[in-house]
Amino acid sequence: MDFIIFNTCTVRDNANQRVYGRLGELNGYKKRNPGMKVALCGCMMQEPAVIEKLKKSYSFVDLIFGTHNIFKLAELIWTAYESEGMIIDIWEGTDKIVENLPAERKYPFKSGINIMFGCNNFCSYCIVPYVRGRERSREPEEILREIKRLVADGVVEVMLLGQNVNSYGRGLGQSVTFAGLLREVEKIEGLKRIRFMTSHPKDLSDELIEVMKHSQKICRHLHLPLQSGSTRILEKMNRRYTREQYVALAQKIRREIPDIAITTDIIVGFPGETPEDLEETIDVVRTVKYDNAFTFIYSKRTGTPAASMEQVPEAQIREGFDRLLKVVQDTAREQAMQYQGRRMEILVEEVMEEKHSMECPSSIVTGRLSNNLLVHVPGDASMIGKLVEVSLDECHGFYYTGHCV
Ligand code: SAH
Ligand code: SF4
Picture 1 (spheres, rainbow, N blue to C red):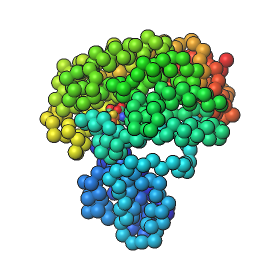
Picture 2: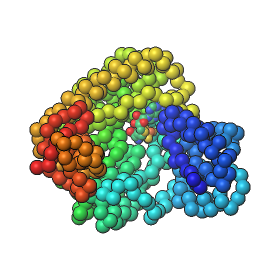
Picture 3: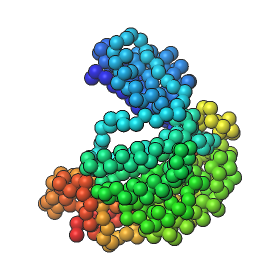
Picture 4: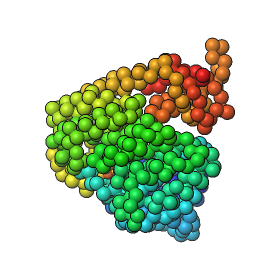
């Protein structure tokens, strides 16, 4: 191998630990292959303490850059090959967005599109605003142009990405909302499905619900991070909504958009969280009936306000996490069950298994429903990227098996 680059995440500390683990493995390899270059980029590199540690203990790394100067990649690689020693190029922030960078896509038929960068919310546990900088929205024309180009290239599903898509458009010269942007994306001919994430509950507008309700293309799935179901903890987290406001919002969405799947993120063990607080979170899970939830153990991030608050004992966190996970899984299974026997459309994503049994002579493909549930049906590679109608025959908890109709 000639060149290795790690694009890093730092939202939780275990991501950082994995990077150090990988670097440890690479050290020996690099000694045997001195010509090989090792580069690191991404959020973790925006933390000054990380850079200090890399300089001290991983001095064999050749190139380090952060989140604000990715557009310099080619130039930085060139410099790394031209010079000796560790090259470090980290920008503290930027108010610019560099457009039209080349991209290699993983799937020919679907693509993510950043509609904004950074975050201004400063939830007290979260490192994102520090490593990603202030919120900046892309001009709607740039976004629409990119999507049209992707559709011309065979993309049928897009995922609009931002830390808080509901505040899209703030700070742009023209007045444009996220709902307004979605209306324009909907008009793009040839585009079949629109997804987006993440929605901050505090900024989710009635206009967005209205647009989703009447849309033919926006998928029946909303990721609406809860973080905690205790108003007391939500306040300490600086989330700026109460348990009651969140539940009322989720119920309104379920009422207005039937069949919508609501998924969420939950943190267990935020400083000061008691078993009673967690009980309130579990209660919200039961009330909202999440179709899926990502549960995280609180991770202390240096420099965030929560890092200096009193931490919860580990045993309490473990016990609470397991209790929550069970309810989350039971609820998700129950939610998934309700589609049994229905006919719905999937976008076929990949071939699962090659032909191997007498009972099932064809291969199996996996596809996604609008609500994000996976379905396995007999089929072949020619179906990849196509929307096909299937019957949902058997629910296996988090996915269905079915057949084309
Ligand atoms: N902007 C998105 C979330 C981005 S981070 C939002 O506000 O919803 C993705 C998820 O990681 C968060 O929703 C949160 O649940 C989790 N997370 C962020 N910081 C964390 C921390 N310090 N410890 C544990 N989980 C964290
Ligand atoms: Fe982090 Fe909160 Fe911003 Fe999401 S909204 S990225 S959780 S600070």
